[in-house]
Image (cartoon, rainbow, N blue to C red; front, top):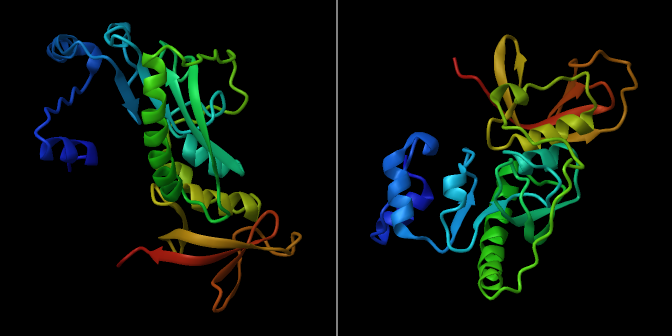
Length: 248
């Protein structure tokens, strides 16, 4: 399936290159250098760029990163922002360096998180905000008014490692609040999930219900009503409101 970037490029007659491994693709590197680019802009690209790429543009090789650096360096800052219960996050335009998300920060935009924010809705918000911030930032780099701010060596928050399917498994010994964040952060991919009668139950929406205090073992279904499936957790209960059950 073509990405939206490739679809848009082809619609406008723009060439598209898709190197599997930039470091090992000499043909691509020669094509890139022949373009003599003013800028190279990276967004959600899962490869570390070699110095040859970083040094190719006239101005900068810049990254649109989905957090307020130096917080949440790494591949999945949006999901981790929800998982750790942040009230705000944002976008950083940064100059790329050899380390992962360690280069100088150029500009930032703050974005609030709603109480029902999901990984998907936050991605859409930050994609739009990041595009607008990028367009505002590039002229300041060209005219020399951009301010480059160095990052501290250590990030003040955990590294936002790449999300995996197994991260969506719900551990009901945790608090209902933690699990509610997990459900939102893993929506739409890879989704939070648990098991019922040996079959996978994907959870798309839930809410926290105060109370339990250890009366029922974590993972016990304590009731089913119009609100949803009530499940005991390490602290409080989780009400599963939207689920999909594995088909026969």
